[in-house]
Length: 416
Image (cartoon, rainbow, N blue to C red):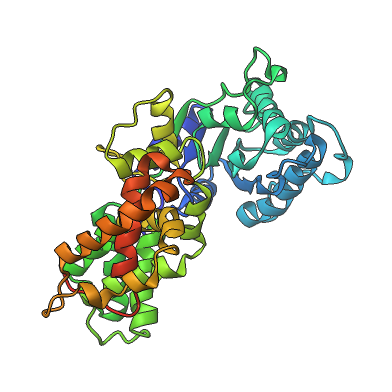
């Protein structure tokens, strides 16, 4: 377990003491919910606030009405509050809250009126909301701001994948109903939960060593961190694949570099939900040009490039540093395989025999391989690339597809 607060607790506590609204955002499966639960439990334990986490995901679909969403919200609050505050300080009974576009705001006001301590509300999955539901929710939170902390939560955290600047797009920013009193002007500060540092990954693996005696050497740690880029889900998935699936929980066996390599390949092949979700992102109009620029090696010079880069970083697709690159090698491999699958399946099996391109020592004969690709490209590239969405990166992807088909062909293997 890595410290869920990641050195942010003091800064967040200052905002809470100052009665501010703030935002926490990070890619999926990076520890947002763990962070929120730890924060609520710590605040409750310290005794100065009543803190509750509530997810708004139950209203995260386009066909739901504002009234129905409000009902879902107060039901969720009534249910989840018990997990954090037991039977003390519980919110009002929901029976009298039947309908109305201000139902959530009224419910929070009535609840705060009964409390002997200020309420801190941590709202998860806020950016799952659409259109009028999102606008209504933010408006209600903004309207209650002036009456805090006696009659409204002292501090509210809005938590999701993206910063609030992207909420506007999800809520139809051109909708005239938003009006001049923007419901988006409600946060004092945004916090981004970063990937694990190498030191944090070392601390995580050392806990396994303490419990079992099984050591992750510095070389193994380096390989695991290089492949995961510190992404929390990938970090744990790689270690889990080695310890549980490859070694079958035999803690007496040594963990080797080859095992990390095998674990990486297995995760790519399995395409579990976390990795498979990348497929949903590659056709996003803000994601596509960034991916193309990485593949082609060109700078993303187009209108809105800054917003697109920030958006891709918020989603965790690319790293936070420069130059722009995929967040980790596993994402890079998954995304390029998704983009090249249409090319790969069209490559004739007759030219995809790995054994044809091997030297006697098992290494690749690059001259023979590139001669074969040149001939294949000459005959097929024009017609194939013309019908491809990623045309600007089509030539590079065409080569990648050819190489992947050869290297990953089950009928042969290579050394390099």
